[in-house]
Image (cartoon, rainbow, N blue to C red; front, side, top):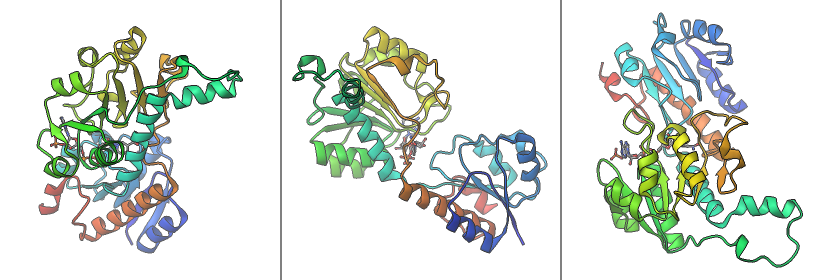
Length: 321
Ligand code: NAP
């Protein structure tokens, strides 16, 4: 019987499904040495949020497939996995809508100061009718610049264009004609997007090209009234530069679901800034979506080990090996 390592808790029914197909070993990846030792004994592994380096895979000769319970795969060295003949599977699509909802929550919360003003009410500061000091800025009709208009960016564009009558700009290395037709999205270069957007929303994968894509110069290129939204990966933004820009009033506010270090350290200046909405990486975190992701990843892994997986494969080259 095949052996599978489960390194993140999954729902009971998903675990039962995996048990029907393989012997299961469960281990917390925080126990690093034991985790690496088990990788050498198993045919496949399923989990998330753990960096799996080439060094950790030395001697893992039985390992045929890794299945991440996420769409992002920046925790893996894909070329190295391909060289080793290890299939890497991920979970696109099932999390697109819930993540787009998180992005839109950040847009609305940052513009209308929802978190700041809710805290203000709870602190007993609402003692008369509100005045300009509590006003936010409008969302509807504004320009949304999406850096990385793929699956999630497209779902954000749909909310923006059809729900909020927003003008949508985007940058991608290749055009997204579906979003152009359906939502009037217009592809521009990053400089134009930064200079003209009221909301700049990052939805690119984290790669060597997108690391610190938004730094001090890009923040300076944005409108003073602009709001930066990041629900991609923390390192796509130079966080020190962002903190400086928020302090200096270079941009108006930020809505962040992801950070360079997670959990966000207690001494991060972002935590004391009223114009920052900070969420604990909840992009896809609904009961329904997290269940769907775990099941999808489990099915991906079982099919990969059977040699029948044809979709959700990051390194398709390995299938032809
Ligand atoms: P996707 O469909 O692959 O979309 C990514 C988009 O980024 C594509 O349109 C791609 O277009 C563009 N892109 C890639 N590299 C680029 C570059 N160097 N410059 C400009 N554009 C670039 O992926 P998705 O499903 O929407 O997910 C996107 C990312 O969201 C994931 O990789 C993950 O990191 C993040 N995410 C976060 C959460 C959360 O909890 N906060 C949840 C889910 C996903 P081109 O290839 O044409 O450039």
